[in-house]
Image (cartoon, rainbow, N blue to C red; front, side, top):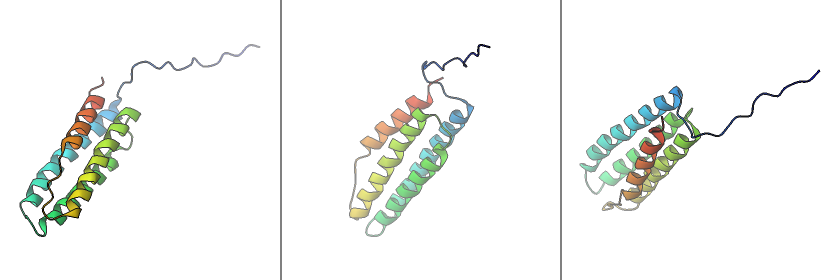
Length: 120
């Protein structure tokens, strides 16, 4: 008796499922909420404000990673880049009360995340 194997999966263009779309919405909200909290923490100013800013970047990065669970590989990878850039900013703020690190890498990572989330 001949048996037939299940058809092999084809690797078409990646698509986002409902779970990934939910993850994208949650991460976008995390990024916006974190930006609001960073702005408040920055108003504290030196000498102690940089500690609050650093802590908030860390908290934001943790939220992004927590909400990326269940996403597609592409979205997870993009979320990981966002998280890494947030942690990098946390580290930079932790170094100096007068730190003003560039957010260009974070902005690029967010654009990559938006692109990954925009896949139909």
